[in-house]
Length: 110
Length: 113
Image (cartoon, rainbow over all chains, first blue to last red; front, top):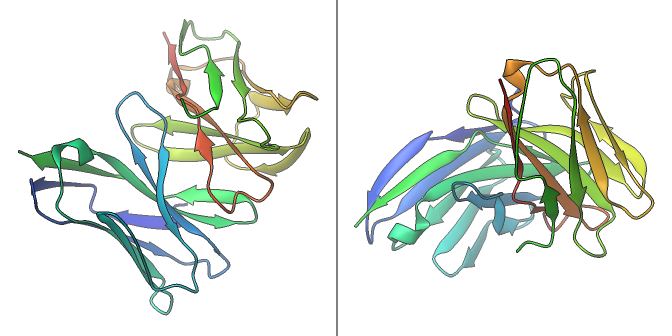
């Protein structure tokens, strides 16, 4: 049972474009929402995270938008670069345990 | 280097065998988590230990077991291996609550033939 639903499964964007990945959850007890970036052959690495009392958080070219009432959150990658090509996972934390979305493979074309 | 060390990086073994995967958490982290990543299942939580005690259990098969030792390193034991157990196994560690995210190791790729 996937507690965090992530879409799309994959996306292709041109260099300089915007990548948008969406996630939805049901458990209102989740209290921390991180995004992880994973390159082939590597473990996931924390990219950016948000608490549910904040509607938006920006770090460089990466922005999380959080809609508590809709139980949805999204990652925006601005000015996408070839080096951003990776798999991105949203996640949600409750009771010390992270539940992950299924992942989105982002390909940035030069 | 994330600070979380997993060994071995690759493991090839036959069906029915038993293997042990090892994880050393980042310095100061008390919690260790094990995840299985396969192509069709994504990142699946297996089990969590906190300071030597089992804290949470996920979709871990009865053939699998884990423990965390007094020096905080952890081992995941997989027995009676089946072809379907082939996957990447990740260990992650965190400070007590995981509130600031986990730090993942580079994983162990297990291939069962």
